[in-house]
Image (cartoon, rainbow, N blue to C red; front, side, top):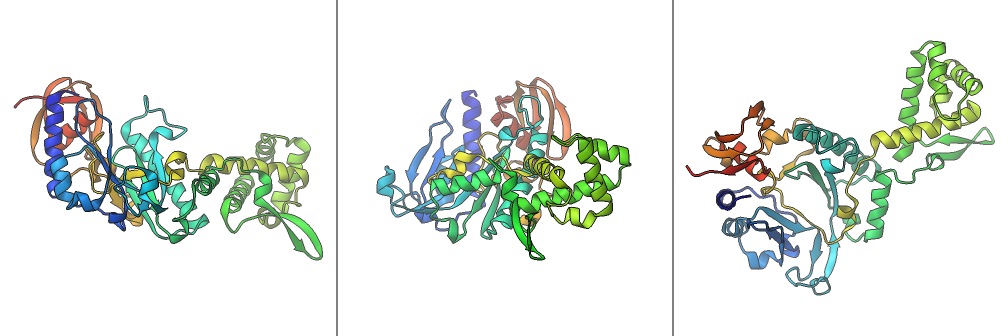
Length: 385
């Protein structure tokens, strides 16, 4: 990035922070604060600040004009001290981070920016299912990261003092790591005898049971030959087991979909194993483990700007997620309405602010919001006007 571009972006970020609507975290005075300044080639974070020494946050950010702003998930007795021991750790929020770069089906070199954002929002829905239904957390904040993902801050009192090991267990559960068929099955008493059944009222058992019901409904919609072929495609289910399962699904549907593992014989157990694998593939959330397990992590401040996109780190209500469009709703109003000249160094198609268009190489006049987006993304440089 050229020096002129850095000076321009630093100046416009400073203007933004003069009137920015920042969403401060609870107990901001007990948190560590940090930022990365606009400097040629610099990625070094200036940290170990406290709100007490920073003073008015808008004035401070207006003066510093940083490209990134962070606060700690942790609460400290003395947040401005330079060593962790001296800070006096008192607890930390539980942070979950989703980034499109880490999604298994996404290739950042081939997938468009808008498609990456859409895929990440779907993963956010999966993550919130775990947070709200499996863990029953209620004090949560959902934030668009300003670039290619989302952060979820959990602030229930029960999580404040979890250590890294406990937080890693939550990560493993959400990602379905080492999830075995036996973990979704339990032994129940029925009519004086014991039988094995599928858990269905919570956790991964509920997800696998939902898969079982959907599978049974699909099977009933097929012809006998198609259904048997579908069953035989499952590992360890041959013709005999497939026919037995098909008969049970068509004549004893309620028992089959109730989660009774004894119905259908050994083939039913292989089917449950298959559906468990299917559930973990479809419903895990690929969260970034180091972010969640780090009890001293610094995370982006909602309302601040992301220096790699120029977009706002936007706090979202639960009801706003489905309709939220980052490439429109996260554009800073401060950067709208004016036109600027930039030198396009990486031409091509782009989706931005509700439009899809092609930008050509060379000096172009564009809306300032688009120009800032292109410059921060490394696709343009500022020119003199």
